[in-house]
Image (cartoon, rainbow, N blue to C red; front, side):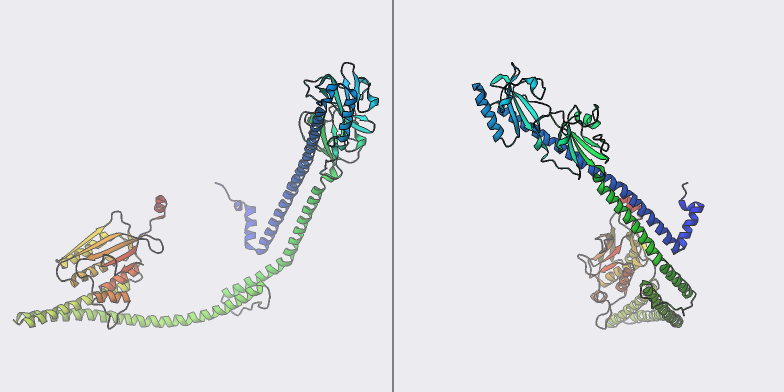
Length: 618
């Protein structure tokens, strides 16, 4: 069985101490806030650091990739220019003067490329046949500042030389066959000075080096670094090797220029179609300056929050705990029925409001206790009077019923005797009317007794009744007492049980009996039990409809019950309908005395199914 932490002896004592004192709760809350602030600070410190480091790496890697793409564009543009120059019809003439003039014009007029020199090499003689610079004409290939093998797959192939110096410029030669002159090659030298004009460094103090497969810096935004070794010695730098394999990435330990005292980070990316690798450098202090600032701010905010929290607790903690202790002591005195307790009602803050509220509560409590004491005395006197009156009513009711029944027996007996002694039809009719009135008086007396029973059971709880089962015995008595009546009961199958008082079947039977008595001759009464429309609260209800083919209910009874009161001009002939109205109201039901196609209708709440049954049905 798993034990809760509070079941451990030491932990349990700590939990009990915290629960028993606001001071300990305040201390526990302070400790929890301290831990939360510490954890949040550490989390932010680590997370923000990781995000900023990742951002630095991504920005530098993006810069290196962008520079590599710029070089690739520069390389592709110069290749295109070289191919365009080699396809001109001027080579078909074989006139060196014309070719020289054409190449000079291209060097001067092409704004998209910075051409330093252009010349044609005779592959058979291995010499410069013609050039934009006259002094270069006749120079052997071995005398040129580059060494490349003349291996071309087709006339569209363009070959690059390694960077070299022409005067004070660093250039790269682009070599391609001349289609109109198959035995000759066109060499166009492009200045590399403009390569870095569009480069932007993401970190202050950054610089770029483009390194070839020999470890030579072929391009640099610092002219002095061009054509120098990227790494001291003959070994190739690891990031250059990775770039030549087509990889790109970031490193925190580049090996460039170990003479620099400042640490650097670098990102690298290869240049497509070449053996060049772009390496973007940045001082480590500048690359992570935002990281250091962010961590400093996070630490400062955390310290400020903790100091502020401690200050608030120190200032307010003593005041709050002291005020609560004082209020607790005063409340205990009131609990001990000591009502002359003084409260600090002059305090202007929330505790002052609480003191004033408690003082007002104390005064109100004193008044209420005095009122309850007086009310108790009055109720005791009233109960004594009610008990005396109830005893008197019981005695009067017993005497009334006894005397009424005895007097009715005397009246009816004498009326029958008088009827047997006369042959006068008018007198006989009068005597029968006297008998009928006497028996109606007995019925009223019995109804009065039922009303008394109904009033006595006003607080009786409702019970669950299968209406058809409980109605049949009561309605059978009506048929027995009135043979001319045909009372039928019909109910739906699987009808829900209704919630009603146990007196409901008798009340319904009394009204049906009144319908039978109100009708001269044979009468058929149909009692139907069905499911009704849900009530206003949405709960299911059961409907009990009564319909007859006779004269129905007396209009005076219906009008009196609908109006809800008896008046000298509007009074019921009997009490049956009143009894039904009160019985239905006790069950929180509704009595409708003017339904469609029926004499009256009773709607009762249906029994609520048990929780398990409701869930199963759902």
